[in-house]
Length: 182
Image 1 (tube, rainbow, N blue to C red):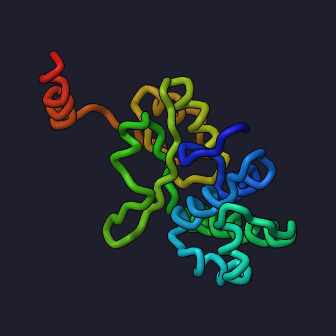
Image 2: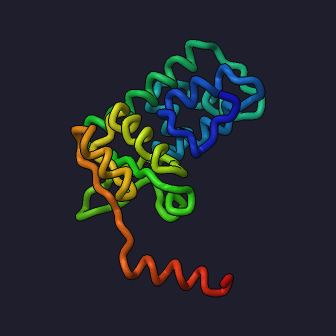
């Protein structure tokens, strides 16, 4: 894996692991993204993972030089945090294109309950189906995707799969965007 980005479908703990072994220094960027995804400051991440705050700041600097045992502790903590969300059943996989994913954050409040949105970038129906299977294996509680991929995923997965179809409002909105270009 040559580039770990926020588009990655890898679990956060694996992104940290890849950042550790990749050439170049991807650790600070990846660490900051992980803390944002988990909704922790670097200080909170340090406290909760049992890593001294000074060490956490070194990791987030341009030239981290840290023992392997520190990385192991951090990766184990992040893995456990991600697993907590999955066990609570409040993680929904959203499989769609980049422009749609950009409309949403990582969390949505519904009836006073916070739902974690795990993004899966798909540009084709085939990618959507493959990512749906991956999302189910990663333990998401439900999947939301386009109607064609949803029809297939409903047949092969044992979690709820909801297909989102066009509405008149979304069609009108799309036409308003396209109108100046026609």
